[in-house]
Image 1 (cartoon, rainbow, N blue to C red):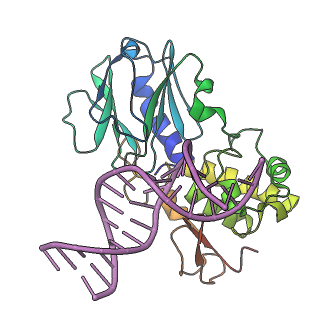
Image 2: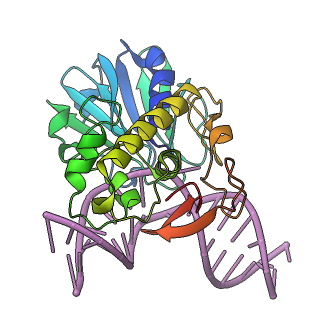
Length: 269
DNA sequence: ATAGTCACCTGAGCGC
DNA sequence: TGCGCTCAGGTGACTA
């Protein structure tokens, strides 16, 4: 599913349709998502004053709180006509005042929807999150300082949301390749210089992916139904046993924390 | 505290 | 055609 660039693409896609609208109603056809969907009736009638992203969460800021939405592995958010017939995995509609609706579709139901009254930052899911990779707080020094003595693989370290958010399996693989760092290396043994390159690679990879509307692998499409074109830019993800696009060496596939991991034995390390 | 594994759920693709 | 297995853009809860 969506990593940061896909969530950001979704945010930008739906923003014009929801900003300033009132939430007319919430239609919950299937409340059994990652956590039970329990949204009070008090959200009805409230205006959407802002829409933003924190990590891979989409935040719909209403007048007295925020709807916090996560797309999990297979989630999708689209703007549809309010009376559009629902299909199999269309679990929730956020019906808007103008007759349109934000529709959450999520076959695997790993996504979630919460209502947080007051300050969204206080929600338990968001409280312990690390820095945003596209913010000034993130950089080589930050990664280096936080990793001393840590023995986890640097790839797992990079995907740890308590450290830095938004970096999922695709972009972790790609950033490590770009920085020339071997995924299995212990985080505590990566040098300061390497972390500088890695932080830069994370930034560049995410920004390039956002520019191209994210990555479409199987079923992800943006809110407008268009696929993401970053797939064409992938160097290692999903390319095990195929030649490295840089040096021609066969890429190696391993498993790290039960996630598919691919790297070039020559370019990385 | 840290590292590793399990669990949640559906669908696609593969070998037999 | 069908069955069983593995894998998939995530991440909180456990365990040692």
